[in-house]
Image 1 (cartoon, helix red, strand yellow):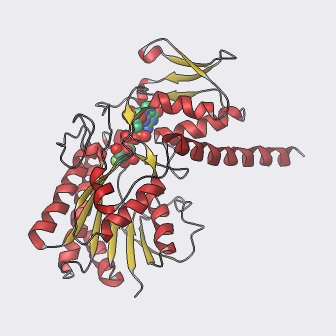
Image 2 (spheres, rainbow, N blue to C red):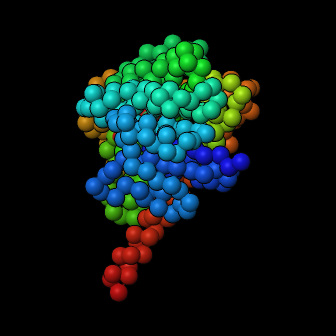
Image 3 (cartoon, protein in one colour):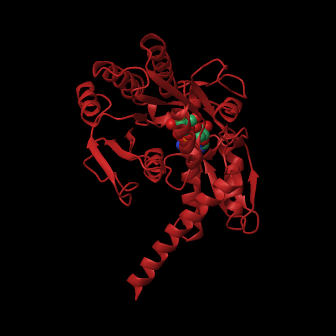
Amino acid sequence: MTKRALITGITGQDGALLAEILLAKGYEVHGMRLYSAVPDAGRIESIDGLNLHYGDMTDGGNITRLLDTIQPDEIYNLAAMSHVHVSFAVPEAAANINALGPLRILEAMRTIGATENQIRFYQASSSEMFGRSPAPQNEMTNFEPCSPYGTAKLYAYWMTRNYREAYGLYAANGILFNHESPLRGEEFVTRKITKAICEIEAGLRDKISLGNLDSKRDWGHAKDYMEGIWQILQAPEADDYVLATGEAHSVRDFVEVAFSYIGTEIIWEGDGINEVGRDKITGNILIDIKSEFFRPKEVNYLLGDATKAREKLGWSPSYSFEGLVEDMMRADRVVKSRIELQSKIRAV
Ligand code: G4F
């Protein structure tokens, strides 16, 4: 029988990649999208066969009606206020969407009478919940979130466990470390860097302004992670899993590897807010530091240990760090070539 999946946050990087994976597996895929006055469906426009519904994580009635109408076998809750830095500016919105949103789905599952295993619920928990806890972090590590985003995600993590234990619902958490791809939003540091480098190469800008170069993240490829979250929901018993590569790199490393893709070596000079990154050959400043990109409180070091997912689900990532950077750089260079071609056509 064809399985039916509902993905909240279908228009985001993860939603679009997961939708493609599920369609390829033969699922009927439903996506919940937020109403937006400006076009926001660019990532899913080319995907055929999606069933789209307007929905809102702050509207419990809407969520209950959607579940009742769609009757999904699996729900992937990927909708979120996903930017950690911005969550300091909108902490109530972050709580409403990231903490109470998943609770609304769990309550809707109860309201429509979902029994054990009838609907499988996946909650997109985050490594940001570990915050200041020492690395490496796994399912047994204490949570010490350092942002409104991480704190709200932690509430949803516990409610997912609570509903599993209290009501016997199939409700699982994936604690995902940073996962990127060419579809990553430009406000996140990896895509900000790869896009800007391609623009520098095309002569469209001179430099990139960044914040904390020394914070370390365990960056994996979002395609691997979306396959992993599907595996989480196929396990006979609902459980919680860390997905990570087990390798951490600093923002500085990411900059160096991404620039090396276009044959540029970076030399660092100065300290703190006065540090700059220069092109080793030309001496031009390609990176500078701006205080506006520092957070009120920073998570300095995230490094995941995905032993449980490897042993229980057979999951492991296929992309290396260098492979991830290369995939993102290659995609942004194609975009850059398109811009160059358009300007040549205009000039003729
Ligand atoms: O790319 P980021 O904004 O991702 P962050 O904050 O780690 O959050 C991402 O991963 C989480 C999983 O751990 C998700 F839950 C969350 O939704 C999101 O997907 O920042 C990465 C690091 C930070 O330490 C930040 O301070 O890069 C540092 N950074 C340095 N300069 C910068 C910049 N971050 C951004 N966004 N922009 C900068 O200019």
